[in-house]
Amino acid sequence: MNHLVASYLEPDNLGAWGTYLEQVDRVTPYLGPLSRWVETLKRPKRTLIVDVPIELDNGTIAHYEGYRVHHNLSRGPGKGGVRYHPNVTLSEVMALSAWMSIKTAVVNVPFGGAKGGIRVDPKSLSLGELERMTRRFTSEINMMIGPQKDIPAPDVNTNEQIMAWMMDTYSVNQGHTATGVVTGKPISLGGSLGRRDATGRGVFVVAKEAYADMGFDITQATVAIQGLGNVGGEAARLFDRAGAKIVAIQDHSATLYNPSGFNVTELLKHVALTHEIKGFNGESISAESFWSTPCDVLIPAALESQISKVNANAIQAKLIVEGANGPTTPEADDILQERGIIVVPDVIANAGGVTVSYFEWVQDFSSFFWTEEEINQRLDKIMIDAFRGIVSVAKTHNVSLRTATFIVGCERILKARQLRGLYP
Ligand code: GLU
Image 1 (cartoon, helix red, strand yellow):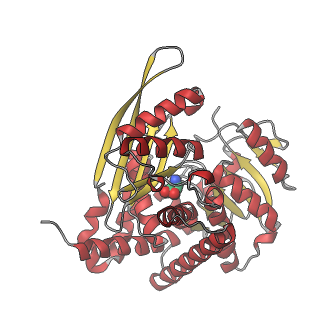
Image 2 (image 1 turned 180 degrees about the vertical axis):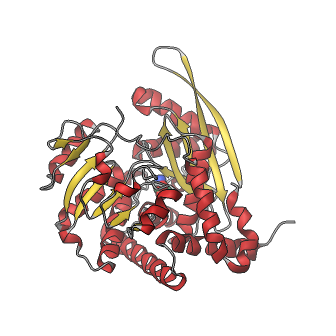
């Protein structure tokens, strides 16, 4: 049984793109004269579907469907990850690319929004097959990407090695090494210190700030985390280090509860070794009961549409900080708001990754690399300043943090759109 499908497949679920469109509709009344341009946010600038054929180790030929979407490039080159997942669809990648447009605008890094993906279960591939698929995909999307055009990065099930293959494939086709074509690369190939942990770090920094705003101290918090991958794992480490207790965890393999708090160091070792939480010490509970577990802070850090009208009423947390992209449906947003549960939305909460991707891109261009301390300091400042700005917009308009974040992001994008004007 997959513990992550709770509400993902509900018949009335709008899907990620539907969720995004609803979020834009909700913010439109606050955009004033800029709302004239809002339609631009409701359609991607360009989408590409590619066939990715590779020879498998057993000699047969397999075909995978791949996507790259440029949602909006008004503020700069496209930026966004590449996801390998058996359920990836074009409309999901469209939504993820749109959230990148909003996210890069919210933290004010000079990028537009893009995203890519391949519909594949990467666990079914050998390392050689994974490399061949990655290289063929990179070659097929060659016309979309480039250091000044669109810069891919890791996302679900992609990592530094995959970025190294993408960088190499693009560079070989160009005839020169172009490190700035992807971010999230290995350090030895122009990657940035702090990039791998940046998303999880941003989640923790923003959670701490939001919890303090509510009058509470993060060191005393109990925390539930869905997804112990790159984002949830680092967030868990930082919550634990700060003295908070991780009391519930869930991934595709299991849902575990431990009211006295998991040993996070051991948990992360277990996950590094087995790639799942199954088999770790703790009371095994049903997938649904994860949501009703008593806790102060809930971190969804897995996939979209996990918090829906089915489980939003059961949530016990005071604060939800979205490590994943699109984990909450609009209906669930309404329920949570009514119940007084604060939601820090994905487009600020998980923006730490793309912020350090921006640092990496800048470092690659100048061939001058910063210390981890400098990177973390700049990251923390950008995250905290952006969050403070959103809180003040939320107060001014008396709206949720999600609506306030979308106001900030959409305004920046649409102002750029308006200034550039239409051609012809
Ligand atoms: N995949 C990450 C995200 O969803 C990071 C994208 C990037 O660094 O470009 O924000």
